[in-house]
Length: 206
Image (cartoon, rainbow, N blue to C red; front, side, top):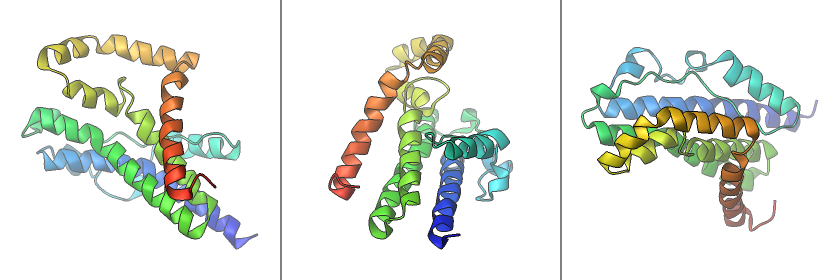
């Protein structure tokens, strides 16, 4: 078998797995910085993939999607966090909420650079995966990171109303997912950022 084909596959499998894992670890580290050691005590700040693997979300689903040449997506076991332990609760929630997508953004930029340097398509696949995680998790719907992050930016009275309506936003999100309506929010953002990065790193040429 072609060594480059094997290398490409390893880059995709390892890159996607650790993109998902590091997203969760980032939440745990951010929580620790703000006074919550729940994730640390649970052993979830480790880079050992066995600590984070969800059999369906981390292994089976991404593998099936990759085999059938579909957009690859997945998840790891959520890191346990207790906001009550935060030294500054509002700031803590803001930072913890955004930590995962910040890591995905950093990985995405690194993978684009590696693709430019080495021209191995696996790096581009991992970059696209992280772009997907970055955009999708910033959508302002529970249980995504964007819901807590953007809610915390609102004035207290409006934030209170938004949290009271959390179940409504969750149902709306599920409806959008089931009907496919979420693509009208997600796809334009994905294309906007993706096209910007392609022009930035590749001069519009792949």
